Length: 452
Picture: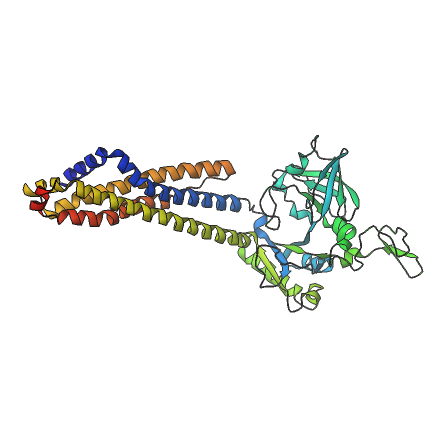
């Protein structure tokens, strides 16, 4: 019997039992579709997150101090240990282009044109380079020492009348203080600008660390200032001192030294370029200084804390590892579905052998060899496996496309998995049909002809 004849007979048998064949391949379809869909979404998510790293951000290293045994992402277990003097020293280092502090500040609400919007974590204090020019839709970066802010679209559009550049926005801090800022820029996206924020859209108001942290809020943050109070408070006699120190006689001695005492939770160190060698030199120089006796940070590190400096790519590698783990988990679940599907094919093929016992006897009586009977039933099971693989692949690709479109991710198809899916379908068909085909080939022709 020629191979083409075996395929024709196998296809005729499948078409003769359409519903049964469809239900038989369902397990294969579901398993392969799940693999293709979730691997597509995982690859698309990785491409979307990595695509958020701009060339300017690639030279940034993000640093914090925490117990090395602390598990979690950026800032997990971080303690404020970095002083402004430390940052100034790093900024003067020849291997470092810029260094500045990063500090999320607690707020109560944002107020614009008398409209109040409760916000608990909208304020982020950082250096001007944190707002990269290519992330701005309009306006400019804020300037250090000015009461200016850059907002993202989530903040600009949450009031009845949209915020625009040059508008005044009032920020109510957790301590009850209120400060007014001038909006000088609006970012093009509401996604986070660094791994410290994450990459999910969220309302953000970006302000310079000076004066919004070093003067206004440092004292209200644990470890942020020596006096433990806010920038504008009252002395021990209850008289307002507007952030100025007084001597023991109550005489004003000048501005409070919160800027000297303010400790940052995290820092950003910019290398001269995105070249790996430049980044390594910047990180080595920063860690060498911060762990030396010359730095203020070294006095607070003790034996429990360790400084970590990582680039966006290194931090995102943790996310990629999680995504890979999730993909492996999904593939494991899909493998169970494929196992169930293969059992279904084996079961149906055994039923088919039983139903066609008399036909097998007739074929053998007219000269069909065992290998031809084996090939006939094996071809039928392989065709079922390939059909399930093709349908599952198409369904998985469509599901991946719809998922990426719904989440608004760049679509990335893992074509290697498409080839793998077809191969798996063939292997499942062979594995599931091998025993039934062998059993059919071993059928005694005389017993088969007597079978009713």
